[in-house]
Length: 147
Image 1 (cartoon, rainbow, N blue to C red):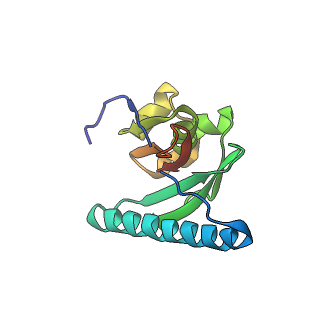
Image 2: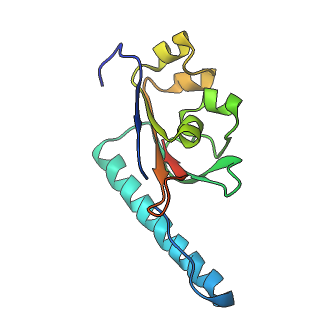
């Protein structure tokens, strides 16, 4: 990544799965979700193996849009749950991406902190960060955020 650049933000269209039948549908739905989580973890693991970074995380957005919850991760543990309010969105790129639907690439975190695009000392743990929204195939609504 080039040092000294400000920010890169791009709109991204984003995937989900659906239910099955009756009371057994909960079990089948859980099987679908379990299969999806395994696929997500395998994809994250594969990308992490090729391009090791400090942390790679996929967050899921709760149905009421109140918080992001960590679904899978590789590397050093980071926040398990992030609120999606204005304050948290100013401090965490994943929360910001989930609210705006925009990819956020902070190639120089120190600079982002200096100019006020990000806040919070926890961001100093990495020199660069990237978060992108993940949407459903059936809807432009953000369902997850990759960070």
